[in-house]
Image (cartoon, rainbow, N blue to C red):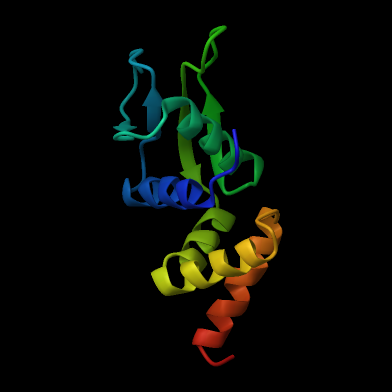
Length: 132
């Protein structure tokens, strides 16, 4: 699986829009017993969405839980909450023009950047837009 920045941005935006108090859950159809928001992934690949949610956790942008795996695929994942870093990332990535400029810069660099570098690019663009 290749990392998809647009998918990561979409997921974290969905997590923010759920509001507080309940986790956001993505499952393969298995029941999740407590109150939660179910993420509608539409036509997106279930396994890729789960893996990208786990990447958000790896990056410290969200607190996530893996609901287990079978031999074939994940059973599901949970985003319990966005971290402060997750909210900061989303604030800098929310503007569509800023995001497109950042993705253009990433692609010009061959696409292989870390989350830290992407955050620096977005922060620099955000400072430019505020004249700082």
